[in-house]
Image (cartoon, rainbow, N blue to C red; front, side, top):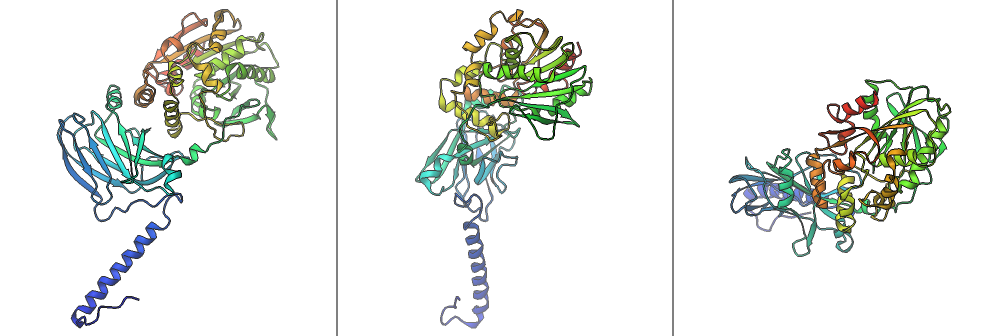
Length: 489
């Protein structure tokens, strides 16, 4: 109970009590906010107070800084980092990043955005967000600053922590901004930053090689699993594949359900008696997984006179070739095989990653948080990734696995007709991914010379399409259109 001061005149008693009640109410609200909001491993976000945004002048020549007066959030633009003078606004975001975040990355603190008032970002910008991790000794390393690109892509920044100011700082380098601007898709009229807790992601279990493979059948608009690690799923019996069967093989860090939309596009123009999906451990080597594709074909094909159709993407192209080209004749009369964005002679992105563990970690994090790729153990549990995983080793230019696969490859598939296509437009997202690694590739992951390797593998046709590495199998105007043309032959 709070008592009024002794001797307070009656005329001032009512206003005093009103002020006291308001103060007490504010104290209760603040106490509630500080006592358990957000992630239980961290202190609550700093309070915004009465000021939620701040304005300030920035110049194209000298840049400038904006600092939130209540919380200390700040953004500093370097010299020549803006294309014009402007009056900018820094605002705190009540709901953190305005995009869906991968469940293993937990928002902490408060995100902020800076509207540049008609100017555009052209150079380096440094962002600082105050946040006190609890306990500091175990939690600071699990926090990372992210920059949200206009497309919603979350770019992981190299993050430092100042123990004196309790601030985390991330820098968007000028080179990254320049690389994004060169894609003609970058709108630098605003910048948005936020802190994410990566402790759940970092605690993933180690990768364990799958003992076998999964096989799906496309039914009622989606892929349904029929074999789980080589064993029949209870209550499901593989159907007779019919006279016009179709096999799909996914790429690195992907899975068969990701190809639902692709198959819908294929079935919109062509009919197949059965559509099958082969799912494998993309962190295992191609010499381990390729023979399992052959096992799947032998399991489902009982009539060797059938004509098959086959679509493989990225690493799946190598898995398909390993299964088809080694181990004797395949169990069918013929197969029209479409190989999309395959790294047939390897990817220089892997060679670059092998030289720097820190860059590799940043690269994988960017792929996972943006749902571009992910990696799982046989039980479906997300797992850690290592440069020492055989799947990555095999994808490098000059790998022994690729050298063996490509030796006399053109004559190693007499029952199959290969047709290839590759992308030559990496786009904004893969431009950002390429900057992490320090390479520039045609589709963001594979160069055209690797996707369309001439006579090396004995392909009948090859085309280049304006797509990046992932949308080449879904872009109805470009990549998917060519796939449909190829499959119809």
